[in-house]
Length: 160
Image 1 (tube, helix red, strand yellow):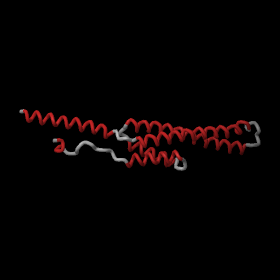
Image 2 (cartoon, helix red, strand yellow):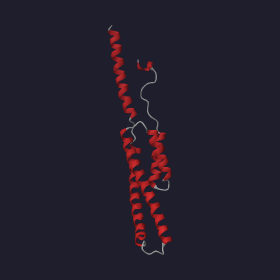
Image 3 (cartoon, helix red, strand yellow):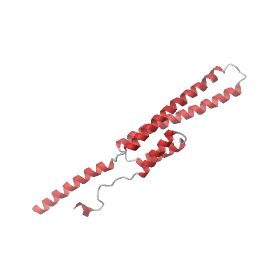
Image 4 (tube, helix red, strand yellow):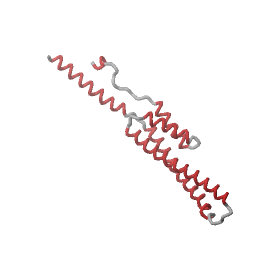
């Protein structure tokens, strides 16, 4: 009887240690990805503010030339520039917000790392000509390439 109780005690002690190790292993250290995502989102927000400034600067001549009448081609050109700037601004703000949310989800240890990685790669691919796009690409590739650690043994015989 004592042998069976000792066996069960050892079994549960071993299982409790493995469970603690598994929890620590699931929340891998993704500090590098977190920092790169925060830096990318910060650069993204800075570029969004610059885009908003230049959109506003281009909007001023459009407002002042409304009463002239002859400059319809110029008004159309300014309007197209303002619309392009507004679309770029909206995209930059949206990707900056995504970068911040995804960075803190990485820090919290979410289970949807592949989805976040693919979105980082897509957003980074669209913004490839900028530093924040390159940072997003690096974060996405690092998330996809880093393997999850499996601390628990695969077979039951290893528990004994």
